[in-house]
Amino acid sequence: MSVRMPANFGRAGAQESALDLLGREVLAEKAAALGRAGKRVEETLARLRQDGEGENRARLLKEAAAAVHAYFIQRELCGLRRHDPVIREYNIPRAVLVRLGAS
Image 1 (cartoon, rainbow, N blue to C red):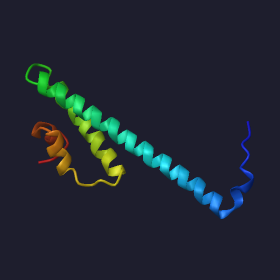
Image 2 (cartoon, one colour):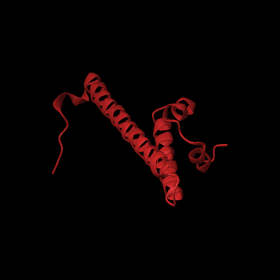
Image 3 (cartoon, rainbow, N blue to C red):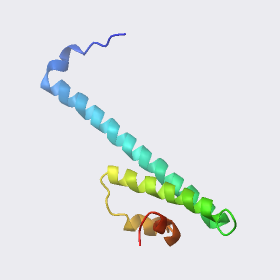
Image 4 (cartoon, rainbow, N blue to C red):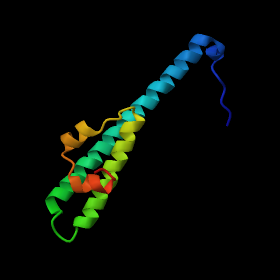
């Protein structure tokens, strides 16, 4: 299978618009990935709060820490470096943050 470039692709305007479209797509995927990661944080923290007192606590803490870590990385990829507001918003327990190396 071969791919042929559009006839007007050689012009500067066409190249810029193609790059613009690609840039928008990348930004949209970053935002979608951030949303999915946030949803996973909500779910794992809810399970930890609901069932986190019994014998499953260690496993639930590990799952929550992994979800929060992935979320923080995704936020940083989107250019969001400060995590304090998110920690307050999601009410992330100290036990989870300690597993990430926070003190």
